[in-house]
Structures are given as C-alpha cells and as structure tokens.
Length: 244
Image 1 (spheres, one colour):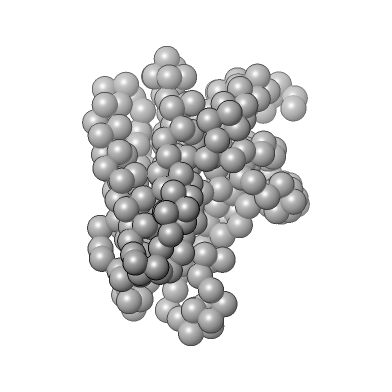
Image 2 (cartoon, helix red, strand yellow):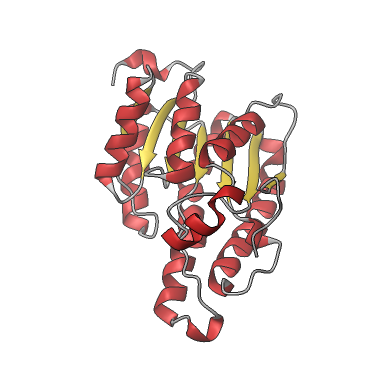
C-alpha cells in the first residue's frame, strides 16, 4: 500500500473476527473516521466482501487472513502487518464462537474450540501487538466480550467461561498498561442480531436484539473519548433488556 496510509495521524486498526456481524460493522465504522482497517479472520471470501463495502464508501482496508487459534497464524499475520503498515494502533478482538448447550451436553472438543477462539486467540493477538504499543507509548486494545461474562445464562457454560476469563485477563492487562499510555477497553454486548444466533432465535427475538451496527457505533464512540479517559468496561444491553 502507498506510504501516505502510514501517516501517524491515521490509525491503523486491526480487527480480528471481521468477516461478519459486529466485526464487519466495526470495519465500516473505523474506516469512516479515516482509519486504515486491516480485516482478519478465517473466511477470506467474506473478508474481501467487507473490504469492498469499505472501499465503496471511500475508505481503505486490507485483508490479512488469520486463524487466531493458531500461534503460527497469528505470528504470520502480525509480521505481515508490521512489514506492510509499520504498526498497529488499535487492536479489536472480536472473534467468537459458541454452542448453546447445557454443560453435560457440551463435548470436550466443543469446550476446547470455544476457549481457543474466545480466550486464547485474543491473548495471542494482544501478545503480538502490546510490545510495539509500549515502545511507542501509544495504543488501544478493544476486547469485544459478552454480557455473559458477568451474568448467568443457562446453556452457555463454555461460552461464559471463555468470556469471563477474557474479562479477567483484560482487567489485569489494563492495570499493567495504564502507565504506558495504552488504553484497554472491554465491551460487553447483550443479545445482538448476528450469525451467532440460530435462524429460529433471530426470527423469534430479532425485534428485541441490538443491531450489529449500533454496537459498532457504540464502540467507536468509546474509542473517540478524550485520550486522558479510559472507558474501562461498557455493558450494552437491548432497550427491552436481556433475552433469557
């Protein structure tokens, strides 16, 4: 990409889990304020579609495939980003999967996959960018969690464990980076109309769910707060309340 995109005045935003839903909308929102958006995930076709949407609106974006469950894949993606764009100013961890099952019905393989994607993956991505942010004394990490991290919902034991674990990790990292001028935000959305929900659930509860665009706009608003303010944790809920 041309060198002018690397201007310090233009944030380089790496979104992991950007192929659809909240992640895709975050790409559109951050590109809309002039950010150069790097879209990562496993579905390259969908990532390219999001990039085309951004470019059709006059924004700039690149696709860097990444499976956040893999140390090798995260390392390869982070290296490619540094070589091409020099830095990551904003990391948004949005990758997430789940199964809606009671604990006794959840297999070990399902539990491992959820934790690998929702907890270990974000940690690997943060590990890849935090040293550079510390050196530059500038940066922002935004972890998209879930209301399930702080509230009990039956049928989501593995998902809750992964999100609660990431919330705890985020809280510790925030304290460790406060004096390094690196902001660490946790966003905990409630029910949002995305592909994570089944078609039946979306038809049944869709009118009560938040829109992915609304969540992305809220995240952008938090990011745009004055630099001396850290909105540590933001809980977003549908207007009519949680869906149990």
